[in-house]
Amino acid sequence: MGKMRILIVDDDKDILRMLEFNLKKLSANYHVGAVKNTDLALKKIEEEWFDLVLTDYMMPGMTGVDLARAVHRLSPDTQIILMTAYSSDKLRTTSDHIGFDGFLNKPFDMEQLRSLVEKTARQSKTERETRLSSKATPVEKLPAEETISLKTSSQPESIDQQLQNLKINSGVQAVLLVNADGQLLKTAGQIVTKNAGDIAKNIVESFLATSKLSNLLENKETFKSSFYEGDAYNIYVCHVNQTSILAVIFDVTLRPGVVWFYTKQTAIALSPLVK
Image: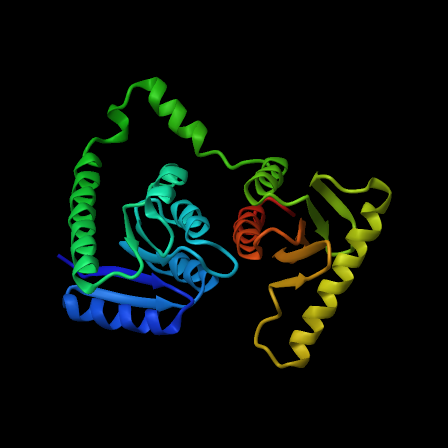
């Protein structure tokens, strides 16, 4: 059996180091990574496979619950343990649908951590073996109706659907798809129509200025995104491809980390669709 890959996420560097050190001591079969914020965690999970994510609940940007939602979208088979100083009973009630695989109440001792991680490791191994055995049935033996539904579900969503899903999932006020010339291609959500053209034009001009700044700083690649803070609304802009960019306008009370995650995922999905 290969090593169990574990990622720890906590904005407290002392707790982060302590957990990383102790998990490595618990077993030579644990490959342990540690990051101090949710943005780094999502980047890691996009690049690598992890069997288990051990995350704090209260962190800047995204909570552990927000991170769990994002992880399940990126890597549905990754298990998640939530660490919290709050009542885990209350969290179990409010976040059952997230599907946490365990809770650790802070403060906890290493024996509690060992027990829960080992339990999760056993579950992970059993589920992997079950998934592998279930793949033995060839697709051609499925009934015709089932084969058709599988093909239909794999069809890419339209641009309009992608923008609408981004608005719903992130809770932003408006989503704008703009071409490199500053022309508004499509929108989702609420935006003042008479200002839409000027907003799109200024977004592109600002983003291009940021890209020029990147070149002046001698970056090997230009900036892929920009974030503008206001007193009522923030704007997050993300590069889609050479012909277009994606911008979201959202209330300052929303967590930027959540908006960042869903916008980035949508930009990736839109890239082959927008010419």
